[in-house]
Length: 435
Image (cartoon, rainbow, N blue to C red; front, top):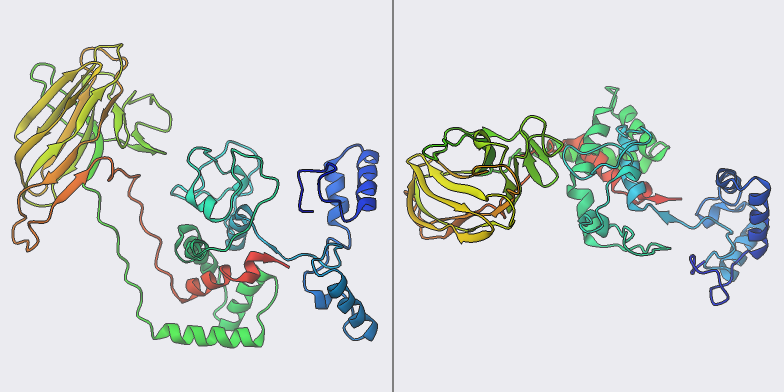
């Protein structure tokens, strides 16, 4: 039916009105039980048909061939359900199938929703995935996820290049392929290949598929092993430290231990039972409960150079006594500000810094804790040439906002031959479609 949410006089008429009447009467007779209604439908012969039209009748009889040809001619759109329409898995079913195929799915029932795209990746069923209506993940949009702000009676299906890129590069695919490859339990190649096909497709490979697999693994032997490269570590660190109440100098630094969605803080809950209100986000933050717990955004110099600092510090609240902020280098405090319900530019120039030295942006609660939210996303710009650098005139900058990131996560292990072959099968139409 092309109007699944409109059953009025202006909607498309149902293809099987008598069947709808029967199902409605059974629904009432069975005590309005949806489970019994679903069981009735799912166990019916019509529902259990295959999608291939040549398997719906006996191809050895002329009568069977005639019925198949007649069905194709009289009902090419399969409106009368003479075969099962071929169906592509939606994103939720795709993700659950990947986890089930790799044997890593978590079937725990109930509980709160959880982010399913954050590292380490959750193995819970997708029905428990957290959906943020204002910030819907791009993967959902790529796979035609229903808009959570609107009434969506039927999903539209698209085929776009981003879907193929997901199956080539996404961490979930890589980890599922690795898990499948590790399940090999036999030293015999053919037995391992049959096990892989039975796990994913509930069948053994054909002779042609076996020949292609042998050719694939032979070619893989001549390919050099992939080189594992990790992205460079961030120049920024996020932590807290102690401020001297007399001189205002910054005395120590400890890294914040926990990253929660968009912020570094003391633990999963904020405020934390041990570290209190300490928090740092991409553009903002909150100092701790006292001068021993000033919040610190620290930049580490990757080489000897000269820098300048740009940015704006703001304290938006009229309540409280404001915050005290300072910029600290190994040579001491180079600038400080005490602001309350105001904004100020935090710009410094011609700061010499050596490789491995730090520039710390420190904010404490001033005299009293309360209404101490602040905004400060400084930008460090290299103005001096790096020694022996042929491109020393190139402008280099480090932005606290743009460079802000979750904890450094190791990349998935490179795919070996078995993992790569498992990835190919996971991206196949046979895995993605219900026949």
